[in-house]
Amino acid sequence: MSLKVRLYDVVFDNPLLPASGPIVGSIHNLLHFNLSKVGGIVTKTISVEGAVVSKPCIAGKDNTIYNTELWSEYPIDKWSEQILPELKKEIRKPLIVSVGYTASDMERVVPKVNEFADFFEVSTHYGMDELGPLVEKICTLTDKPVFVKLSPHIQDYIAFVEKAIEYGAKGIVATNSLGPGMIVDLKSRSVTIGVDGGKSWISGPSIKPIALHRVANIRKAFPNLPIIACGGVEKAEDVLEFVLAGADLVQMLSSSLIKGRDLFDKIVSDLPVVMARYGIASIEELRNTDLDTKPLGRGGYPVVDDNSCTKCRLCVRICPEMALSLDSNIQLDSERCICCGLCQSRCPVGAISGVL
Image (tube, rainbow, N blue to C red; front, top):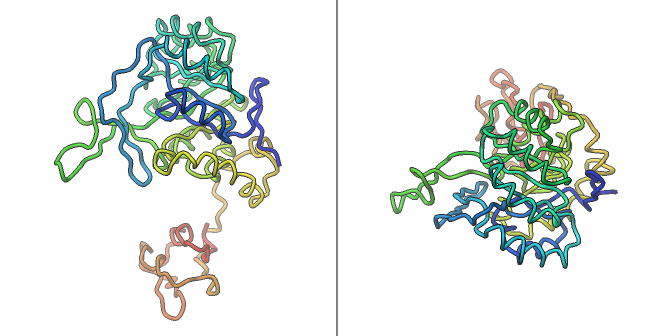
């Protein structure tokens, strides 16, 4: 069973990478990931000057991270003269260097870090403005593949990708944080974190459906374009779903802020087990499998396996039409049931079939 991924003759031991953000913004963090099980490393976004970030800047819930972070708080010279040279002495994985944000910034940043990068990831600062000149500039400054990071705020993201490719991009990262949003603290009667009227940016498992949909549609429009997925990963199944949707590599950040950075190694260790469960021989095989976007569920009435059912009554409580009840076993009122599939999708022991 192979987890390896090859992009532009660079081999990643597995598809999982950290995403650009606070967990890859210092040498001790980068060295940690160098020794971890992830397939590659990504830096925090580097610009000319270090960002001035209002603190506090990160808050977490069970499945969501809110943040008001910017790019790296270190200037380019610290990265090019201290952090990246020290990492180069030890590095044993491919390195994606994240850079931003303007064409003039690229002229100063890219030449200083080019020797350390296997790939570049370009943050577009949440818009299409100046996308062409930005991508064109960086592509004149390096012969390394350039991946452009897509913001979920771009409505016509297919046109965004077309424009990025037109000006020289060799791949896409989809997607960046969602927002703006807001997180409120009732005790203090204020926002927990926020800038410019309380806004913050949203990431974590809660945004996975949006990222998954965009990856699938980009893959459909661009069958041969390398794609790095980002947004909502928290377990091995998520990585594999993104690969099936069309991603070559998959980045994760927010779930490690919610559950701890050991989650990276757990996911990589879990991948072979989950792949075996679903009959997946390799990441490459799954990547070359077309995702069927037509639901294949039967759409019939739910069928409950009484031997597996634990009588937890979750299906009874959530049924939109109150079509389920519990006597000695789960009972179905077929005149009320609308065959929606909610009960099957939420059954914690998989005791319901027949709908999805």
